[in-house]
Length: 432
Image 1 (spheres, rainbow, N blue to C red):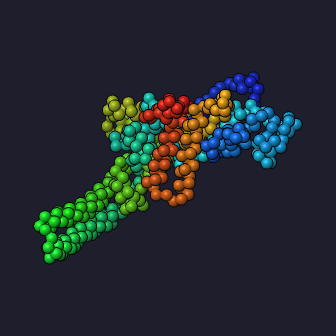
Image 2: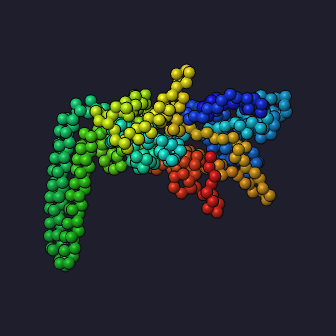
Image 3: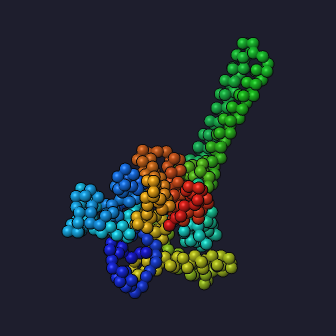
């Protein structure tokens, strides 16, 4: 819902008195406006006191008091203190039924993509991000690899600057290649020289022929490995040089070594990345109003002087419907739905009374599956936050970002992508 949050307690007649209802994408700012506080801890209640943990999934400061007109610490009790926020525990003195409608939110350490727009009857995100050129077509499987951090997406290319720099870049590439070839020969010759001296020493020490032959085989393998390693470096460098001349926005690269080489050598001329952050950057670079005009023209008059094939025309019409819907504006000239909202920087936490925790006989507790899914998300988010503060290597951070994306997927629609998250007895947990 894109409208502003309702008051905490509203009479039923007021709730039912409306003229129209609009459903749309909620942005991170909308979610923060609806929220009464950030949920930072995965804990639910303290099992000794049976009171909600502060900043946890049942926090009274965020969601309201458990008992009518009584703050968490007990400083304020009774209706005469209604509306006061306790200076000690931070809980508002009001009715406990506000816990039915007060929401919280989780501020994410890294953005995630909403699973519904990636995997559904169609991949709406793939349609939205595609282009008119056949090479610009986004395949859902490729996009999925980017979102789960096993492929890399080019979001923008400085075409003019790159074109001007090509002669100089080619010269650098040829010099570096020549340097690697010389280094390979130097290393091989040096190893062969060392090997001759080593084998000669073995003969002088009276080593057996079989021992000398075995050592010779080992040395040959070492020399082959030296050649292979440098040849691989040359191959990656050559592929990077060939790729930079053909680089374009929306290009997806699945080879990690190639991507790293491109970034090391040519990062001044393009931008891109992996995960939801890369998708967000690409959305920011696309002019959807211009795209809509081009799509309408291509459908009516063809593209680059040629009529579209039936298949390309069908895809263009589907994409036009999505792009046009995102370009709709309200009476104030603001976008009704922002495509950036498909990428989440904050996740809403629904009111605690909609995901209750009930004490059973014998001191045990029964809890909604949603609490387990929220707990899983918060744990992973907190771990990623700590690792970011510690300047952890990128490979570890990417693994944590992927796990955060998977936790968000399970919360929104458990089982939509691959195996569902299960609870006791291998039962799939019920998601939002």
